[in-house]
Image (tube, rainbow, N blue to C red):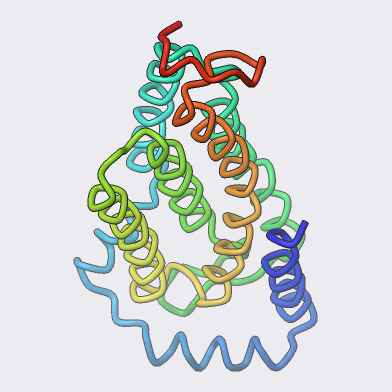
Amino acid sequence: MLLLGPPVLLFALITWQVVAGGPLVGADERLSRALVHPDRASELLADLGNVEVAVPVLVIALAYAALRGRATGVDRWWLPPAAGAAAMVLVPAVVAPLKEWTDRPGTPAVPPAVGYYPSGHTATAVVAYGAATLLLLPLLRSPAVRRGLIVLCGVLVLGVSFGLVRRGYHWPLDVAASWCLGAVLLTGVWLPARRVGRRSSAGVPDGSGTATGGANG
């Protein structure tokens, strides 16, 4: 799919550079040295990517989307919430083996250790906040509220990303790679959410393709 091509290729390029110690790694380390400045604010921003913070936000969105979908009787209303939950489950399933394989050491700001690539906190934030946004957008009628939700999602993800780099918890490339992973996983949420959202707007409660003027199931 065209949507998957750019993030997959970019992730492959970054991973290759990290594993091979290519020129991007040198630039990454120089950028990290320029940006790292551990403080309380950066730590708080990084904490927004904790599972304990981000996942409950997604769970609330999953429950709300499921209840609204069931109430409207749209065909396969359960598919977007299921896709959102699956995307979140896939984050550790994908990130953990990559951390072990790449075996990348951390920045000088953290105790000596390996397994920092890619960033699990960034991937958690991208998928949790991104999936919550994708699930809620079709349910919102106000353009202003929709735009506000998108902006809020972007601010949260960028805030987590900046906090991780600023605090020195991750190299910039660790974060960028997780953006790519998150984009791939969110594609699997966006597609069913868009289809169900269109059916709901058209008032089609079943798979017959016949509009019913918003009949409830």
